[in-house]
Amino acid sequence: MDRRNFVSAGAVSAAGTVAAVGTVLSGCAAPGGGMGTGTGMGSGMTVIDVPRTVIPVAGSHEVFPVRRIYCIGRNYAAHAREMGSDPTREPPFFFQKPTDAIQYVAEGTVADHPYPPLTKNYHYEAELVAVLGKGGRDVPVERALDLVWGYTLGLDMTRRDLQRAMGDEKKPWEIGKSFDHSAPIGAVQRVGKTGHFTQGAIWLKVNGVTKQSADLKQMIWSVAEQISRLSAAFELMPGDIIYSGTPENVGPVVRGDVIEMHIDGLPNLSVRIV
Ligand code: MN
Image (cartoon, rainbow, N blue to C red; front, side, top):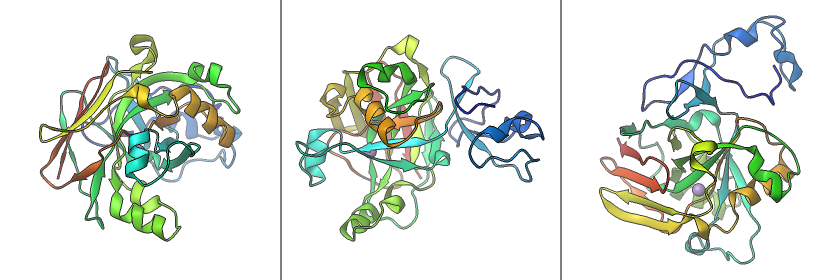
């Protein structure tokens, strides 16, 4: 199977859990199944089942397979300032979360989100997420939106104390950003239904109190610019998704708190910290 082809699959696990399906690869993993075209992929029988991560597509029984999760850092000027950097001088930078950090949150539900280990300062970051149905490298900004299959909204959950400690020591952020369940996300909405997101309200409330409130047009780097820049550093593939950065006023949550986030044109997403 060509990894650039969009893969669709049939089953979805229960709402509020990681949307991982263990059976959908079975048709591809048998000898001669054609998985041998990608780098590092053999053609033999799979010896253990490893669930693959998918996100339901809104209003359908289809699911969107997630290949990589890219995240952009400091993409709103006021947030860049609150993190201690100068938004006027900084080129965009990116990090990744592991694919299975996805926690799917169904529309109209409040998913239990586990407070992670090791942190005493656990932060929310509300973000627009672009999902890619096509790949490419060195994609010009003018063509970048052609890669977008749809959009959703998500939380870039962050162990801020660990992120800061690692940054202070000039070590990788990994432990602060790329841990289990760190990417709550809503169902994928087809771009044909939503259009592209260049403006509109984005907000986040904790226990009904507004914490973050901004407009998508305040992004320093647009979704098209993010795709273009990313594609210069990595070959993008179908199934890649991009968390597009958070506005200012990130802050902590504790067990029992309920987070609700909103982007104009998308269903709200809610989790309870447990
Ligand atoms: Mn973020």
